[in-house]
Length: 361
Image 1 (cartoon, rainbow, N blue to C red):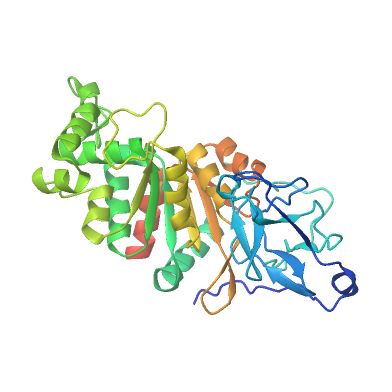
Image 2 (image 1 turned 90 degrees about the horizontal axis):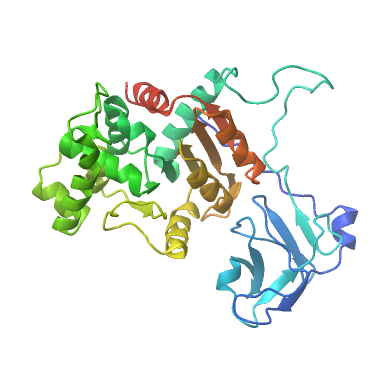
């Protein structure tokens, strides 16, 4: 039986907490503008001392600010600040200004690290057997108790077995929301409609005559019907990732980019509307799995804290996985501040097929 890592809160009876001053909050001078010396939040649990009590920010998000409202710390993006919002001030994180960042709440005992040892980083040479075993048990637990968000690049939609595996995971209840771009949905629908992805057969990978038109034909046909749901219904689509989402009521957020073709009707053209739509799901997420999409993964990582406060007040860990065939993509996520992310360097088509095999067998 999978067991979540227990959260160990700070010991507020220690002298450093007792001596700490109350945190300072200053009003935002204008809409969308924080006061000078604002405190930028991180992915970790952070506390501020208010009237002698240490308050935890129930939600957090990297590069946002904390606003004091009704004795609660509310995390807000700069663009959403209103003039007069009382914003947390301070650049220290060890009680000096009434702010404490608690990075070790979910720390487990590990083997003592020697000053010199081999293979500390996660790379193509890393053995991921333990990661897979943990992930299988985690997903079985999350299906009943959590909210699993998948961040998908278009790469694995090019493969028949990977599309089938992802559709099966959706049907089996292992997916609560999908975040992606125009390309992932386009190539998945193209595969269901014409049997190709970017003009290549999704099984043989042989380019078809005039196949470079196929994704455009698909987008155009969806736009003709007015919605993806209508396209699936009217064209008799019966397979794929988006089909499974529509069939089982799983929400998907498609975020636009400058280079999009079409795009498909539900794609967000406004980047901040897309950010809000992504965050709607990420603020509920207890596990996030990102596959083969570096920039979308970093965006999701920056919006996902390392913890979640449940309805009963329990503080639990948020599990974050980045799966990519490129070591650079996996390691770049950590470089951008998502320090709790677990990287798995592998082909994403093989990864999702392996998940299906072990979870549904």
